[in-house]
Image 1 (cartoon, rainbow, N blue to C red):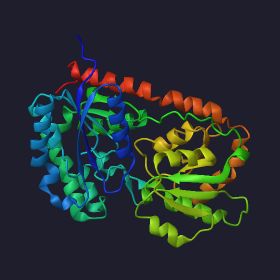
Image 2: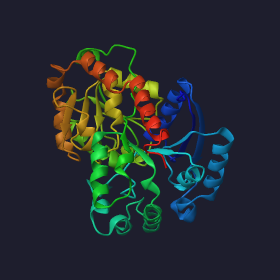
Image 3: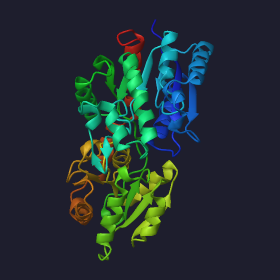
Length: 399
């Protein structure tokens, strides 16, 4: 008889600044436990760590020993990894393989082919590493990881070394969207890194909102919400520059900036009227803020691996202003559930803000909310995850 519950080792290395990956890790742990699975988290943190740790980032003996011990002690059926950089390292995969336990990794970025993970350089999409002959070493010359030659070299070496070992050819990979899948398959056709048979698609969840969405712009506050890490790749500078263009319009909505990151002090220093920095908010407070607002803003300069802000906004029946790029742009149907604008173009974003009045004349919050509830329903998401687990555990994609 097939097992209905599993012992799962859930692995994640937390970044210094909490982000979407941390939220997904917590959500999936809660989802699995709610369905009766025994989840054993193995968590490390990058606090205080740098890529200067060198060999430990390539292969951590600490991870190797601890993961093998956990697998044996708890009779783990499957290891599900979310992030290995830096302190976990890809040694987690080899520890599991040495004991015959299959591994799944959720790909929250494009780091298999791009050391900085986001396919972005100097504010523009860059696909040099997956497409040019020098491969990952392109990132070293461009100092793509944190602007550091040394750290970029170590990050490139991690993935170059594990390509030589063939590590990812037997790891089962979950990407978050069909866009990601096509990008990864395109890159992999040029430079084989993983087995396409082991590539699955499963989105993140956006829990349905129990409250009905306010049905008109008049029922909303005249504000737009930017939420995410406060860093260049999220397009925050574009947003602030757009509000600088809008400041002479007395009817312009307020821009509420939610999150933490290296651009927080820069936002404060700009002192642009109508731009308010709120810092990091608990998830439910952010959801309330989105429900009360005329729109959410997703001005990303990169592809993103999953458009979390549009998903969360649509879940509460709020339209999205999104850069016309990658997963963010793909989440928005212009004139139906939001508007798109050219990435990095502050004037185009300002025009999109001005176009909100026209959008709201036809926008149907209840319909958008219902569609989001169906698309990102936790129940369906759980079933998709179990389908992947069973495929792996039944041997069609096992190590």
